[in-house]
Length: 149
Image (tube, rainbow, N blue to C red; front, side, top):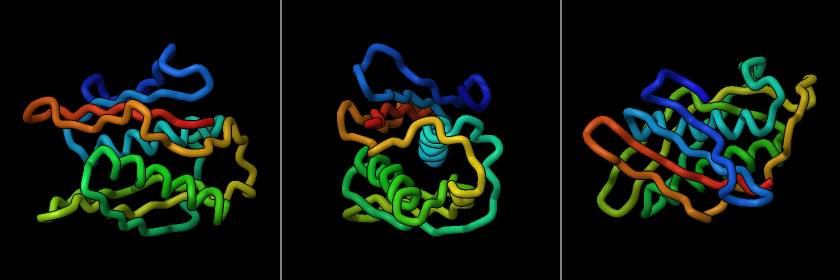
């Protein structure tokens, strides 16, 4: 669990057999994206708080649907891990609603896996199974994702 009592992520048991389910609540959609990225990092690393800010990268994505943009964003973080060997966390995220799409722009920092990190699990992907990202009320967002391990 992360953040204060109003903003958190939690791993949910008994949803899938071999995968990892994550439920998040936050005050903003940007915080939802950050919490999901943090949960993904917790799956990857034994001690995610020790991840150093050695490298920077920029992520710019769009999709027609917010929940699928969340999946696309998290899979992009996994793609960066798999292709560059770089574990990253978004320092800033901006979600922009345009006429025909939702845009996610993130500035991430992180470090190379080869710099001595203890890997917990190497996730394959974030799936579309049971995915949800929605505004519950004026100051509360909720999401649900499943990570294929």
